[in-house]
Length: 68
Image 1 (cartoon, helix red, strand yellow):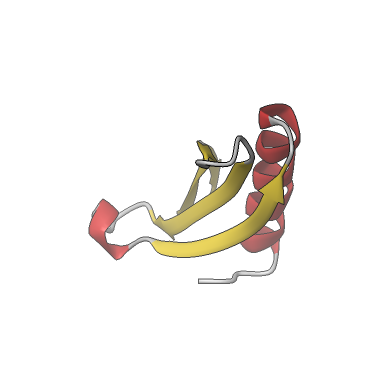
Image 2: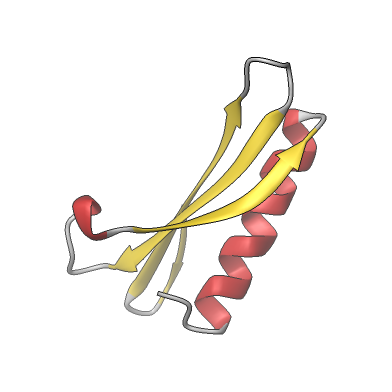
């Protein structure tokens, strides 16, 4: 989980049936419940490590550019 001021970004590397991993980012204001999260897809990757890296990079960009 990344936090910047009033925003939180939760990241996931979700396994897919074909063995790849989907990088996922969910962002929200800290005062809002999880149901208010905005989903941002960050791509499909061959390895879990690549998916985690991509999700973290995408989350940082979302926070910096206020994409919610």
